[in-house]
Image 1 (tube, helix red, strand yellow):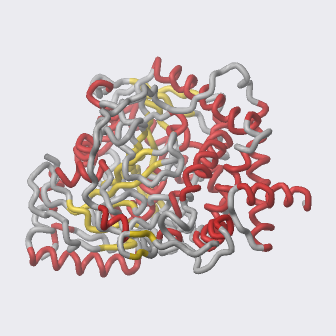
Image 2 (tube, rainbow over the protein chains, first blue to last red; image 1 turned 30 degrees about the horizontal axis):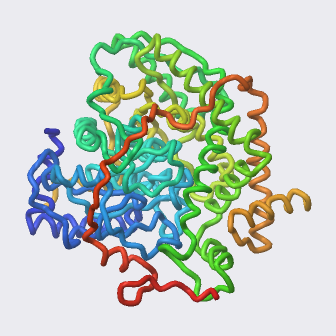
Image 3 (cartoon, rainbow over the protein chains, first blue to last red; image 1 turned 180 degrees about the vertical axis):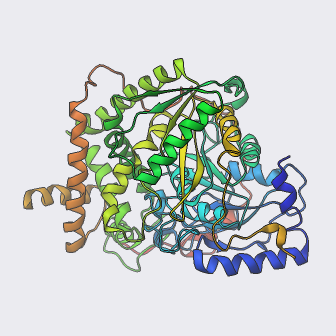
Amino acid sequence: MPQITTNWSGVITNPERKQSYIRSVREIDKNIGSFLSFNPDLPGSDTTVKGALGGMPIAVKDNIAVTGHPLTCGSRILENLVAPYTATAVQRLEDAGAVVVGKTNLDEFGMGSSNENSALGTTVNPWNNDRVPGGSSGGSAAAVAAGLVPLALGSDTGGSVRQPANFCGVYGLKPTYGSVSRFGLTAYASSLEVIGTLTRDIDLMETAFGIMSGIDENDQSSVSYEDSVVPGSDISSVVMLSVGNDMLDDPVARAYMETGEALRAAGYSVTEISLPSLDLVVPAYYTIATAEASANLARFNGIRYGYAPDFAENPADLMKKARHEGFGREVKLRILLGTYVLRSGFQDQYYGRAQKIRTLIRKELESVFSSADLLLMPVFPTQAFLKGDSEMDDFKQRLADVFTCLANLSGLPALSLPIGVENGLPTGVQFMAPSFGEQRLFKVARNLKDTFPLQTPPNYLDIGSLV
Amino acid sequence: MAQVQDEWSITAELARLELDENEELILAREAERMRELFLTMSRADADKPEPTTQAVELNNRIRPDYVDSFNNVESLIEASPEQEDDFFLIPNVL
């Protein structure tokens, strides 16, 4: 059982500690805005379940269903929806004793890298409130970084767990596609996305992943993890992605080089490689992601659930009005792009080609892992950027997904980990492993833990100091 | 630009998206920028590979054919925007 579990025991079950905890979270989160809803007293929350996570409060990104909690996806179109069932990944954590205390903010339907695309709230970075927490799981990352919960769930479609984890200075895991059930995760890009975890404790991350993973009859794409797992023992070789001098900001580049040096000092063999298809990653990713989004979001039509306009002339008009008034700009853009690349006459040129490029990328990564245990890469070219930063507009944010969406196109697991703090903001790197090689990721993170100890932002909630 | 904007207007119609004038102008510009990025895929030597539709090999899993009950019907009805007795209430469109 992870040591951190002991620190959090009694926070929910002891009435006095619980009240003190709730007061502290509300006070700290007034400035951060990580939660869209915070309600540890929701009827149905069972705080008495014994298990590896007995009584541990957790936060869940608001695009993952938890019975009785809102399921807004950060969108006006689902602003009043309450989930009637619980996602398998959450259910498994609850069965191990975890208690969902709230739902965290996100870019609408998971579309964005800053949390600025949420229609329902503003979340800021706990390290510097003028900066974004990253996205789309920015609320989960901010809540964990500020110490409001020890563990939070996010979803990673193109880096949406790892990038905010990196911006907020916590661990972020994107598991192998299929290892964690997606049942109960609101679909955005079904072939790319997976539920992941954010935490400040690598042992807790491993425990939570072990509980969540495994086959689920409600998710056709889920697989039996035990039958597929790649052992984490005997890892010795790491390849570093060769990155151009102009691709990374200085603090990010320094953290990247320091990690390589630390690995060498720890006895790993470290060599550099380049990926010939790297330039194609972002266009292929966004072609596929938007195509799948346009299909998945067709269900939000003003009839089945969610927002509906007061009046419409006919069913088509009803659907258009609901989507016009319910969706934000980024969501509309991605639906528009996805519809375009799937249009008759354009499909081979865009969507078909992207699927073939996806094959090229997978083969390149297979070749990498035929001779190395892990791939080291940056997470994002910059540290957390300023809110409304004109230097980092929406288009540039999409281009900057190049290092993260590689794992989603290939389905491989990747873990972002904090390396240090520079100019008052966290820096970090990510490791990628072959399919079902999460144990390798946990092992290398543990090996680097003492070299790069985690730091805490201002106003961090030290749970041990709660009365 | 007008021709480009028309193309995106047609696409918006197919996507059941109603866009106001200002929105259409901004989205057409952003969409066009992304389309140009997508076009860079044409320079890849990618005619031969089979397309990848899923990152993991999937076999068709078939569940047993049996009648199951769902005991939380009320919560589904309550989750709808409006309801009357056991029915979803939807806007009058006829």
